[in-house]
Image 1 (spheres, rainbow, N blue to C red):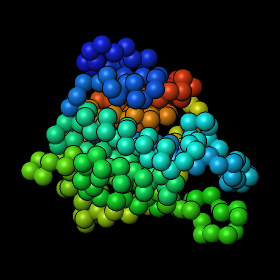
Image 2 (cartoon, rainbow, N blue to C red; image 1 turned 90 degrees about the vertical axis):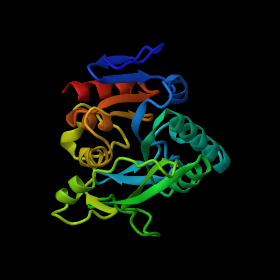
Image 3 (cartoon, helix red, strand yellow; image 1 turned 30 degrees about the horizontal axis):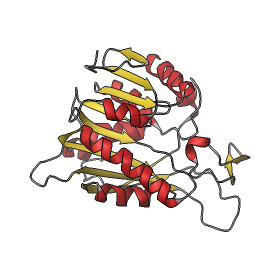
Image 4 (cartoon, helix red, strand yellow; image 1 turned 180 degrees about the vertical axis):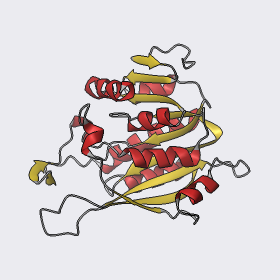
Length: 256
């Protein structure tokens, strides 16, 4: 079991712990400088009563109240707060990956710099099968950005498994544009989450920036694709989400 003094996870198994709670509450209680890598897919705040396309049908873009904020200032304050708490949890050579779209990624980038992080890479995830743009008044949205950053200590080297990434890219340096499909149906057999990331994406992120036995934290874990990838790769995992529905979905996926 993970060493989590003073904390009672909603679920524990071997090197996995899940918390069904407000992420700020949990981040404030975890042991400082105990986490090797963080992946975060925070709210994009794009629930604006618009429409999108899913499985060939017109659907609402609204994800839930957790995906709504009233102003940019409120959104930026939210991002700075959780990023600041995450920095306190990372070991000195630890790194953080944050996924987003244009709805939130510019705030995320500024917040990282304001909190003393140094951005290592700006990864563009190009989706091969994005939903069409139903308004026909803009280009089809087919990419997401993933920022990779380290704590700003210049002399401390972060983990990057360069040779492994080169090998996986056919012997050539891997570039910062990653192309692949949206999450497949077979990855949603235990239930669906509206922003679930594909497993191949999290496997690459974890493989590239951690070692076996490292501790990976996801403060907005949703259905825990991060945890499934971490478990497959022999890393330890802590996931946090305020929704019991999604934590229960995480448990089913991790037990599968």
